[in-house]
Length: 131
Image (cartoon, rainbow, N blue to C red; front, top):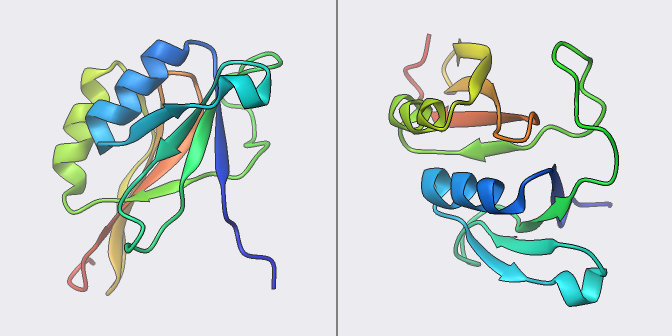
């Protein structure tokens, strides 16, 4: 079975992206640029004992996404405890809502945003009472 074990977020401004993901979601970064031959920072997204994967911020190698284009990649979804408070932090960075918060009935709240680099990502708050 092929399990997802790593993700890469393509960025134009590495410092801006590191600040955004570090401050909003608490990610930590390790400089792996020497191994990658370009600006490349490993993203530690949580404790190894928690469900989830780690990934990286990678210097974008082509044109950035264009507003309203179809997603041409995988969209990562980040689990949070309080979607509303995380949304407030996301919006403080000038990010935009791609798809407003909605209920996955009996399971969770979900929303999608554009990050500081124009990439779409999801936020997921488990809640059995969502409707």
